[in-house]
Length: 124
Image 1: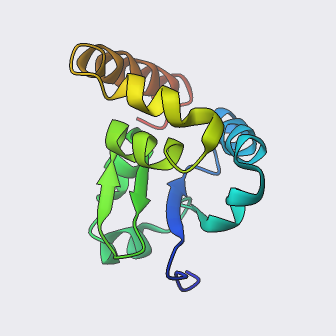
Image 2: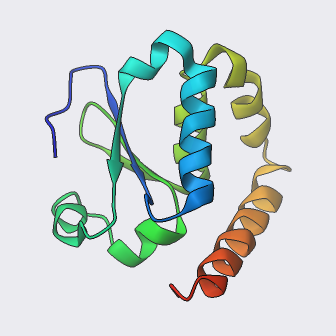
């Protein structure tokens, strides 16, 4: 994996997932010039790299993981919030997702949709 710049987030995404690829493209479009602050890392076939970063490869398929410039790995909705806060257009959404009464509902929905996608594609 390429070395992290001092301000870059590493976003671990599933390059075998068409919707994940679309999500990446959407985020890059929304990020504009801030997209250069991200390093996208396709987890497909990269179990050894994931383990080196302390990420369970099975969980990497089920939850978004982001590695901060300091080397801290954040997952699930915390990863989405961290990612969205870097983009002007998504900052309000990040705030909304983090609300105590919204977050648990979104987490449950998020996991349900991911599990359904992985079962449908035979990857779980």
